[in-house]
Length: 275
Ligand SMILES: [Zn+2]
Image 1 (cartoon, rainbow, N blue to C red):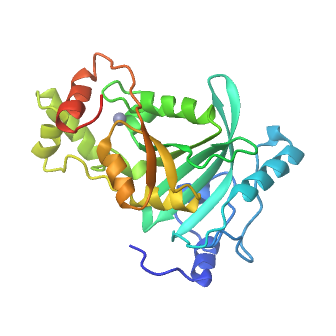
Image 2: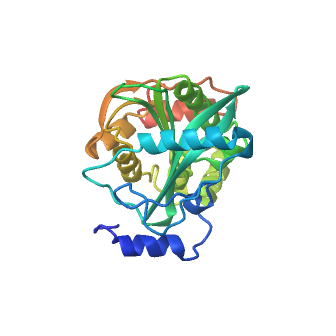
């Protein structure tokens, strides 16, 4: 845990010295910022933007992102931060999102926040999805869980809202037990156990996720009041305990497949999810 505000010198070193490939520094544009959100002196601030956007529009968008970055009076602390614009294709349309990458504690604790904000939006509480990373679901569209469908639904809602945020947490893989343990637990489920007992049978916690990084990111984005898309009341409680005001829990239910019916039933019956 970082308990002190890293000095600018340390931050500059962290930017200038070679580092392992991380989400924070492999992002298309690496604009180093200090813990207060201001660009660091002498750090690389050249933003490489997609050529197809054109230099002029790219500069305009970069300025918009810079304009939207809140200047915090009470600065959350991260080891490293990077911001850029990220054009994505979604449902046949190009959507321009703000991309904020964060590193907390170590390279194992990184997260991406994608922000959609309409020009001039003044809404206080954005629509927010705090999404746990799932290699099998998010990337390969596994039908054993509902992660892919939930991520797609979140993208649809966020990109059509005036102000929406997706916080993607890769280290939440397998409800925080990691990829290998998740696949071990799947194998236990193949023997007949449900998702709760499968975790316990391999000596893993049922849910090892914490939301401290997500809460810090929301504070960094200036969004301490949110409308949270989730079916999980524990996620609402966790964020509230970390100082985030959840003004509304927005149900985020997707259609079950024949492969995940039991998984969803277990989440409803044994993990208090509102499904
Ligand atoms: Zn999943």
